Image (cartoon, rainbow over all chains, first blue to last red; front, side):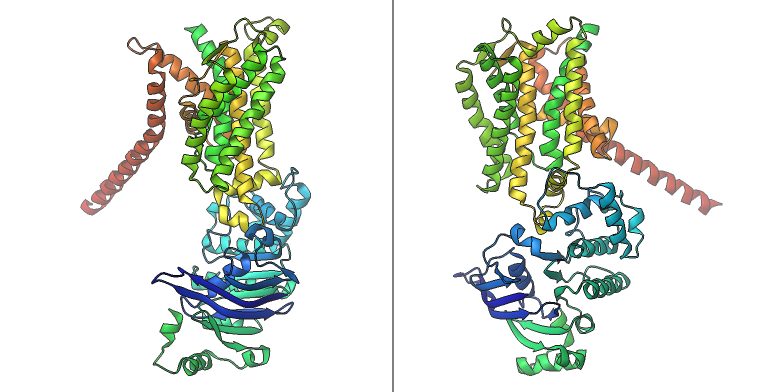
Length: 264
Length: 305
């Protein structure tokens, strides 16, 4: 479904600040794969996401989605195949517009926008049915402005908006990091429920190692622009936070790395 | 006094179309578009030259609308494809249009008093003092309702989202660049349409009549929102229309003050906008201060008791 081939990306090339964000990264995901990505800040996780979504264009390498080469396709053109939830709950929705209008925007992700109404009676029933999946009562607040919702509610809505049109790839960019623990758990459970139900091919970046272990069938660890550790379905089942940390230290040659250093 | 007020309402209704255009760029797209100062005159220039050369005034007015659409699209392309900052792309287009308008008109002022215009046509159909007001009110309200409907279509929704959260709407596969071009085109089409009608209403088109038009548009939007509110699209556009009429009435009243004359119009406009922007903030602060004082008093009361 997703095939990334020798992706290379460098920032500030030719200056003292030069930084290799992705160093010939290869990543292949099969239909229905759910890969969690962990790694410290600056490891290249977000760059990886941005290269897939088209926000950044790689200096070298190819990105194939669903058998099509998307490497140099503009962000909005490949968005029909990609659903994305951002870290910031404010980023995934339009605050001055109502819940149903936001859903109408998302509904058009895979279709050409026309001069027909975004919210019709039939569509409204469809939106309501989808909102019920969130168990937040939002289906009764279709005409409420999204700016009035709490961060957790907005993130749940973002998740729904990114997924209800069956994207080929779902990108989750630390989508629970800005929420309090109970809201984060709610979004994590919703993510599991929705991804399982729709069988979405998902790539999730997280700083929470437990979450990375709980969700998905594969796990990769990134550092300095490279994938330094990768666990397949079988290997992932036996992993624990301790084992992951030990693995990280082994690869990095010890150096007294603490949980804190990896997570910060 | 009554005739002056009547005239104010009449022209307010025509300027309301321009204000709706400013609403589209300023509020919906969140793009402060100074093209308006130029495109308003462009609409009048195209219409008046076509009328002088004998075409139908209705056709001429529509042609003015299209000229404005093109001008707005150019501003949008300067911004999205050229990467020029929004304010600067508007200013560049405004200054360019000044020369283009002079070229279209051939001279700084085209008189229309002897010509057949939309206004004279209306007066021959319904000979009444009210005919222009009623006809223009119908045209403005039709445009208002069409704007409301458009902003609820799939294209309209993504246009609004561009002004609200650009990154988000791009991740839902909308081409935000072309959306902005379209939005600015439509905005300036309305502005030029209004300019074409104002030229015919005044009986001349002057190359300088667009100066400060953006501020008048803003004044209408802000006054309207303060009086009517903007909780929904239909309400916001109604506010713009009412605001445009109120603005004309305020100016008419201000001009009746002894020491002010017509040359002070722009100053009055600026002062109105400043008051409309600052007054709500001062009122809010006073309310907050009063609340605080009250709470302090309550606390003091409970302590002594």
